Image (cartoon, rainbow, N blue to C red; front, side, top):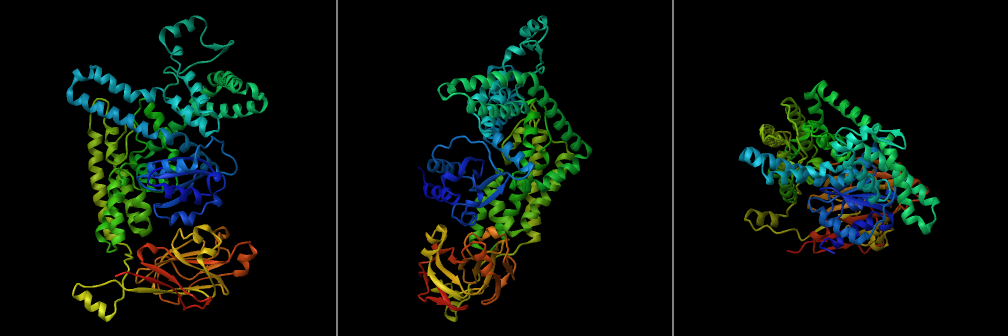
Length: 632
């Protein structure tokens, strides 16, 4: 294993263990789990785990956002999980749209990186042809570059045959076999076509069928539908064919039935469907491209957060694989730079050293189009900077569509996407437009985020007279200790007796557990509410002296969805010691079958030399509960 071994083990544990994982993929910043039961995952623990940015549940996937180093973390997670057998999706997957998004992301996500690489190679070839002239365009080097860029698109159904069959729970190599028959050149070769024409055209045992003029190479929809049917057929055949001959007869009969049916029925129907959907999207764009660009640009980050952008990706790939330029995603191009500008504003304006440090790598990754660290770690919690980036994204999206910017091939993210907008003859007009728009988006994102401002949560340490005097002479020392007062009444237990391993094993930090005798939580110090969960069962606070505390009311009470809880404060509100925060109904929680234990954790435990819980067996509100000690 690598350096993320411990993180990998903790992630697997908190998603419910290996036995709860059906499958795992990853994108640029996220581990995308398919879990058997998402309720077994400890979402709050994962969100607060060092090395995890946040957790998203969307499109039937349990997404653990890691950051730019997710490939390295994925390797260690794979080592912990071992070999996962392909399984078909079972059980509830949410609404129809969620299922569609989950299917599309599962099919295209694994091949998106090589698709982008192929597009960038084509862009490089166009630049070289433009710079070096016609002699280069006629050279073997140009041909090799062309093969590198076009090869994947030509045999795209084979790649999709693998990923789609795996997604549908079938045998991936059988999916490749079916796809290979679709791109078989014998049906579209000129001499072969003439021979078939003399025989009355293509047919299968007298049943006629036709092949698109360019063949099924570069198509998407036919192979997806074919593998969906084939996976279903394969599973049915496995139930009836004896084990002794199952190894070769299952793929034999699957191919024997599925491939002719694809040529006769599935392929022609799906080509019509693909053309209809593509034309529909083009009609929406054509109705008012500027409004379309504004909507895409403003909402793009929200779409990405919930995985909904995958609904558009197939149509982009379909157009590009057929050699048609597309402007479907033009409006989203400069959004990452608007987000990066907002991060820069936060980085330069905040006085919180931790936030400033987090902003630096988020800014750098944003230049290369990876904005999850910026969104989840910086701008979204601050709210206004995030909405500033959305507004700027909407404006740049409208301008981009108004300028008619198109992509000629798949490209990378951020600055690496410029090659996608270089035309095959080397014209860089759209690439230059994008560079200018990106610079403007970065500047506007910075300016608007700076103007709107945000609540800076720098801890303000209250100094004694002696410390104030030392501070005035530049000799300030850290406070020797800080105290966390009990937010409720009840019996004190050691943290090891918490009925949740994430707390009892100290993964989230040191602290105590209280068995409450009264359902009321008050502020344990003067400070700020950092997090108030929508279900009101957990509160994160930071004291004016910098101590960060999580109060978790009950175990697994997130399942109650707020029933039995009432809050009296809002997130980011300043509170004084003793202010009422939340009330909860002990009887209602117990009646629902949940423990009423209240773990109280110092989540920034590593910042202290020691975290000392009270030695008392019971406490009242306002009693000293935990003392944090700082080494000077």
